[in-house]
Amino acid sequence: MSKTIFITGTNSGFGKLMVFTLSKAGYRVIAGMRDIGARNRAVAAELAALPNVDIAEIDITSDESVTKAFETVLAKHGTIDVLVNNAAVTGYGLLEAYSLDRIRQMFEVNFYGVIRTYQAVLPAMRAAKSGLIINITTGASGHTLPFMIPYFASKFGVESITEGIQEELAQFGIENVSIQPGVYPTEMNRNGAKTGVSSDKPAITAAYDPIGSQQFAALGAGLFGKMVEFKMDPQVIADGVLALVEMKAGTRPLRYPLDAIAQGTDIEFIEARARIKAKWLTKYTAQ
Image 1 (cartoon, rainbow, N blue to C red):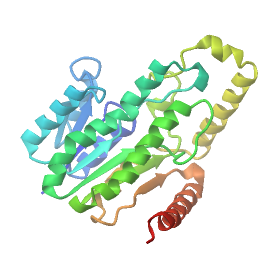
Image 2: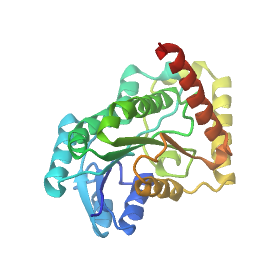
Image 3: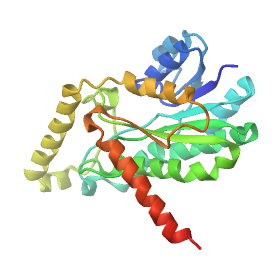
């Protein structure tokens, strides 16, 4: 029987490509997004026309919306075999120039939204004694950069969820993987193409100038220049999700970096991190 795969944030970018890719591969796909009767009506209709695709109205910042969406899908299909937590917002600016409300807004989507979907899907996965949850995080998986601190903090939080819950869920046969993209030309990273949650205290931003603006411009030029240089294709992430879905249960990696720009340094970092953690655990847990 074909797997049922629930994806959040499918109105654009990685999420939309995942729907096309997984539908083409023969899977039953639940394309989750907000405002399917208004702002996203056209893309909802486009995806609904694909084979084996259902559209689910879901706002991951709302407890009620998430609960209703998962209950509806489970009532219709009886199972959700794979959950892909893709929906997210980005944002730029100095940490001091962010209000706490703006940071909370980002965390409601990027961090608490993931917890909501976990809590909505896990009872069914535990009952089935199987499942796969894929979390889209960031290529900067264990370090941060200036001018994106709240964004990276929210994504590091998802890395922590993925790593910690892997052992909690092992007895139920539920696997967790974080896909770590680099910089890709999606709506999230095209200037003005998608609204982010950026800093909102311009007077503080101005106090850092001219050096602050110069640093930010240099960082942006470097990141986006590399994106062009390496011809980063968002389809790589959709193909990565398909590859994980089709891997044999029990063989999937905890972290799955897909960043050509890193030229293998991301894999080195992940491996070194795992070795150091194993040594640390030995020190703490050895009798």
